[in-house]
Length: 193
Image 1 (tube, one colour):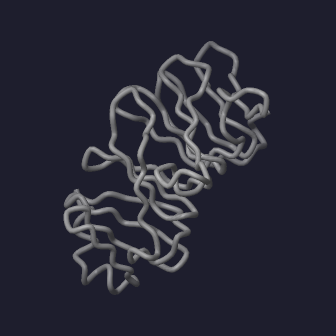
Image 2 (cartoon, helix red, strand yellow):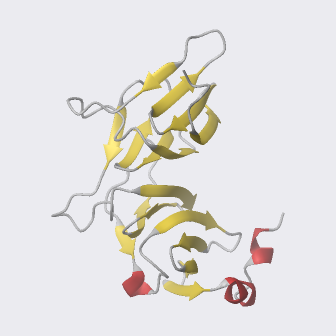
């Protein structure tokens, strides 16, 4: 059944290959049948949404799945998820539920959403709480963030609907850049090995 499905993300972790699709999350292990995790509206511990855009292994052995309805955290050997979502009345919740990217840097987790970047302290074995948001009002090129990357200097690079933005956590400054501007900002060599 996985043979003809579009694959959105891969993560070799937890002794398996996790495969994110439009139809859910598969766990593939040698010698075992494929295990499919799907969203179930009646089960708050199911996958937040069937569209799994990104899979990120964390230092505590958990895997964070970026979905179009928030983040689903799968602990090692677990079959239930911890879900992190936007709560309209809570300014400290995830900025928006459509999540495209998850990056860890500077002891924080950075979440690229269609409502800007959500930032929270990274505490092992705990779901993130108390997000602050970086948005277009703060200098982000657009609130539609599809991808994030941390460079060696600790800066966060965001691919947005209106080009690249670099955010410096030390100065709390966001600078929207074009490709030429990224070169002037000392960008490309900050990723070199």
